Amino acid sequence: MKKIVLALAFLITISFAQDRQEKSILETWEEKVGKENPAVNVYGALFEIKHKGDLSSRISLSQFDNDANIFALGALKDLAGEILILDSKPFISYETSNSEVGISNDFNHEAALYVSAVVNNWTELKLPANVNTIEQLEKYIEEISSDNHINIEKPFPFMINGASSVVNWHIINWDTTDTVHNHQKHIESGLSGVLEDTPMTILGFYSKKHKAIFTHHTTFLHMHFLTDDEKIAGHIDEIYFGDEQTLYIPN
Image (cartoon, rainbow, N blue to C red; front, side, top):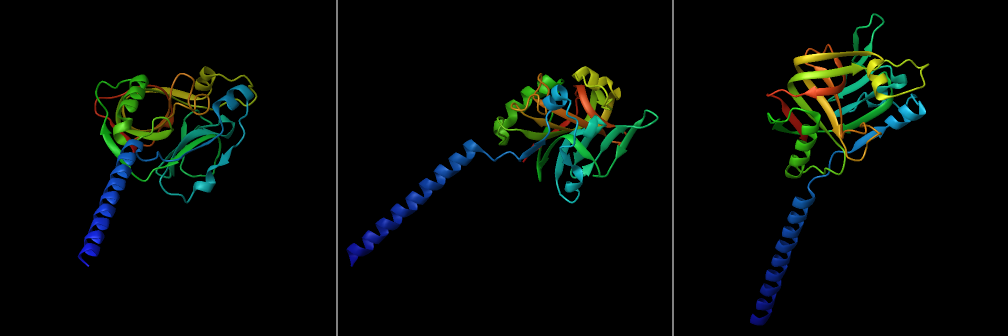
């Protein structure tokens, strides 16, 4: 009987040790792999717009009318404006008939290019004072990705809040009879301007794998913005960040 008890105690000890070892291995694996980035959905592609002149609708925004926690950007069908959705609230910017910025807050629009993700929670980080340009932001995002469980090899959204020092922006309004597309003509086709020391919310998407799809060939980032007074929203062409801005990445 004593031998049986000792044998059972030994087996229990071995089983407990194995459970602890398996748990340790799992925790180590989870630490290395981290959490998956939120899924990024892409409809349309820049190369199809620029090289094929395909400005057709790739998706209707109305299907997302009742969805929660959506963050998205893109361009309208026929390149008739810019798309920005912040936490499921749309800010669709376009050029009005009197050449002013118009903003629509409904989902009754079609997109030629649409990039979106559902994000339930964000991690808040102070944007360092030495991060001033798009190139410096790219490098900083890469540096912090591992410690914040972001897989830098897959696309993901980010946000920036606060007053940007300088923002060069545009809202596209393409002449559909023009079949020759390039980046400069897109910038010049509609409204454009420069904002200085303006509080705003920026939504961006980072990807190393989507050049000519939703980022231009010179960058891993695509960013749109909305001023805090909600009077201007559009595409960011160039930016110099301010000293007191906050970066948000998916948690």
